Length: 361
Image (cartoon, rainbow, N blue to C red; front, side):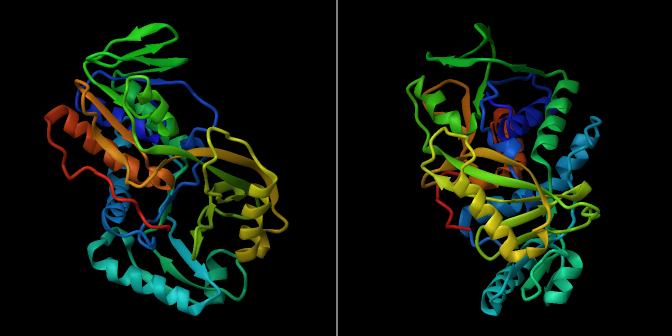
């Protein structure tokens, strides 16, 4: 249940292991995956403990995912290892990020080289940046297009014999959870509930609960005319603002983190103002860029815990995969494959998350 990055990657893991899979999705407005910016760079995060370990494991898994999808003809993912910058106008803040990266580097070979850069070197890699910033270069940083990635994963699932059904979805309680799409019962031996921000109301229908709430994120898409942005790195400021460069002059700037937003995937004047103000503060060269669109996603925010991935107690052969928050495009593929392994063999390849809230990034 759910065709976002969480449900799609569990489905792909199951289909690769010979399981007949049906993916169902209600296509609710505000799904997080299509709106996600797609940064794959966990190593500079202030997160620690279990959350960071999952975050880093997810980034290291990406080359495997790309190779697996290519086997089934799914190659257009918008994925590129183009490097990443973390920038600030405060040398002490950059010192702290660099120290964190170098401390983690021995256990994170996917990080690649780390290099301190001055303002001129930063602008050489991302020309619109402010001329008075300092920063750190992370060679292993990457980006991925969430829309393309999920489409590629679901295409691979179908090529493996799986089915994708879209329509009105409901669940019915019982010893086994019953899934209904447009009035038709979808039979199955196992149900995986991966409904993103809607997982909690879905489970409430069968008398269960998961500690996840929607968090609205507004993300601006800009176009820089005449610029070859294909090789530009991602940029993160010290804090929670970022810029992600894609081919064709497209720059993604984000994002708001509006906890308590409810299920309201709307663009607000204040949200757009904040995103653009943050973008132009670190990259004033984007002032002449065209504002193409603003995407809104409702992240499934785990209120007090890391993602919930594993068995649903009290229901035969039912599992849950949700609560990825802003880290879904990085973490979901590796956790989805691990959950598929647990379902098929009874044993996960590593401990699935049980619940510790990450600190602010």
